[in-house]
Length: 126
Image 1 (spheres, helix red, strand yellow):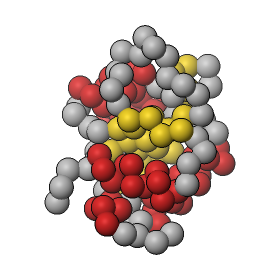
Image 2: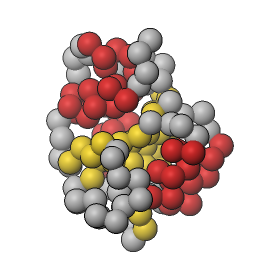
Image 3: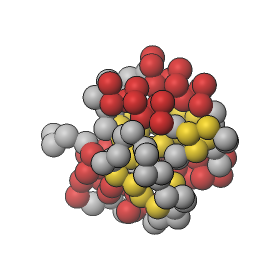
C-alpha cells in the first residue's frame, strides 16, 4: 500500500479494530500495520471489544456494526465517552434509531486506501 497525505498521520497511532469476520479483521490489521499504525485487537466479540475499549490506549477505532448477533453500539458509546474518534465499517445500513448517529460509515467492501484515508481524517492534525 502506498502512503500519501494524511495516511502518514497514522504512523504510531493505536487503531482499535472490532470485526467478527476473521478474514476482514486480519486484512484490516495488515492494512493499518502497513501504514505504521499499531493495532489494538482485532476483537471478534462484544465482550472482548468492550473490555479493550475500557482499558486500552486507543487513538482511533474501526467498528463493524455487528459482532455476531450483537451491535457495537455499547463500544461506540464508551469511545464517545472517552472522546476517541471512530467510524463504522459495515456492509449493512445503520439503523435509523442508532443513538450515535452522525458518525462516519464506510461501507464494506471498501478499498484499503479509502478506509485508511477515512480513519486518518478522524485523527487530529499533528
